[in-house]
Image: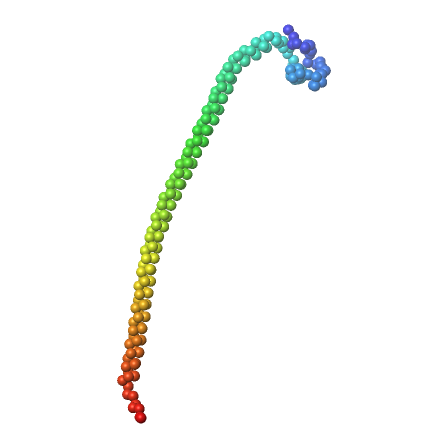
Length: 175
């Protein structure tokens, strides 16, 4: 049997190759293999199309199911990875929320502490205000009392001066 479209030619014969743009991929491949073979010792290989088809079918039937199973397994793994990534993202979000809650709790605790300090300071200020008000009233009373005493002393002194004036000898008037 002969390879279709090929003539038996020896290694020393030169073939004229048609232009590459006129050839199909299959023809190019065949011509390239023939060109490579021309530099090496040539063996006449006779190939039956049916045999090639059966070998191709056998090869495909042998490897295709495993390849399809591998493809399905890879798709399943990819799907599982996506699910796992989503789950992991949700867990990370939960941890961030927990950390945010802890931060929020510490802020509330800190706010309570400062609120208690403010309440204490307010109580102290009210108490100090009351004390200062009492002290001002007392100071005012003391000031009034001192003024009263000073007025009384002044009046007493004036009375004494008046009395001394009256007690001093008066020259008699001549008439």
